Length: 132
Length: 238
Image (cartoon, rainbow over all chains, first blue to last red):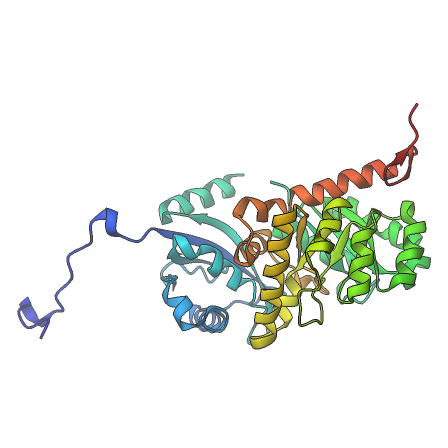
């Protein structure tokens, strides 16, 4: 077994890839605009985005995007979230978001706030916008 | 960068949202201007529309242009003669004869969804060359992709990609619009830019199709508004 030799029975972690071999990532910050300011949970949104991505790009297409909706950064009050994907598939992921017009019985639309290479820079940009 | 959406329907034509709702949503999404598209049958109400556009423009603070969409040859000929009384002339594509007529007419600004309801792209190399010569922009209508699914969506995307390839080859203008019938169908300009990239445009070309090309149409609108303009290529020189 892979984790047979690990201490305390914990899964042995892989050695981290060198920087040059790592995938370049992009973070897409978005806001969900809904009818009458409806508030959606992370689970609702994740299921909805996955459905559209699989529908539009297909299983093979999604596998190329390294898509992930970051749970810790979902702001339910302001309906702002961050998607992580690789730099080659930003356009496919963002275009797919445009194909979402409903979440349950509610009409929704997405506003793309920022696209950046790090979460830190997204947070800085958000602070700058708030200051204005 | 200033982005424009040049194909939105309001309650004046067959849309479901009011002018105010559309303008507010466009501002929220980051558009600098929109074009409200109507049909020839609503031409009698143009003065009423102009008044409402002016009110909304002041209230929301966004550029609003008035466009008319011709559905057939008769409407196109009528709208050509009334060219000075409105801003943008669109032609509803789909029929081969009307597509051909639209690209041959210099008064036309946009040929909307030439592949609409067709199995083929609705354009060929000859028509695209004419579009480039007469400065007619070929539209990529996002609503067509939005409301279709599965096999029909793939066919529409394929046809749009063919049209984009032809436009790039012969230097014809490509314009991306939402084609929205309601403010809920309007999309963020970044989403439209990304869809343009998926269809075959380069990122800069895709941005231009929402910014530079609408601006070139706005320049033509301003020229037309001046008293010196008579018809395309003819103006009073002092």
